[in-house]
Image (tube, rainbow, N blue to C red; front, side, top):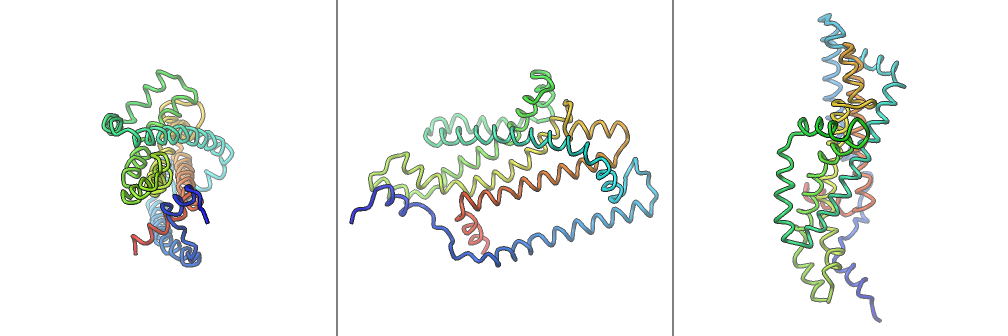
Length: 283
């Protein structure tokens, strides 16, 4: 019975899916990882609340956690509208950065000369501080959406591009040689060997980049914007509303954590074998 070359290549080179993965065990491992973090955060908040209550420090200097939550809830509509604007900038800028990272990483993987030419430039780009770039973006492109998108893209591009480039380079050479001996083209080797092997590193870089994205968006808005959590923090700071500044910081942190956790769901759908590999390394 004959088998198609594509099926042979996929069976020979694609990583296997952990069908026997115990969902209950994975959930228990996740809880064991999360509980110490929750306990630590709760202890720090309790210490903060006790200190503010016992010391009598003014709310303009250091509000209590309870006051931050109360005032944040009281101004939830205003903070929510600014958070929506920040989330929009974050997602658009990150999408631009993600697209560029994939395109350039694939081009670099197919051309060793471009790898030697571009990777040092990627590294050099990280020596330029965002503090210097963001005001220039405002000067060049105004106070609209474009400069903030560019800042987010610049902040998040490097980890994803390098993660993909290094992931492609770390592919199993023996598997690539096996496919070439079966008559596979360079594109087929890339599809069935280099691309799957790069996904675990890519998702690690994706998690780093998505947290940087929110920080970059807030900073760009802080420098110059009409709406967003960054400009909201700046305005409330000038009004000595430290409680609302911290409430906005809390919302930005929640956005970062939510986006970070979403990458695990995407990884589970796109590369289910990656979690099994990471678990085996830890074991």
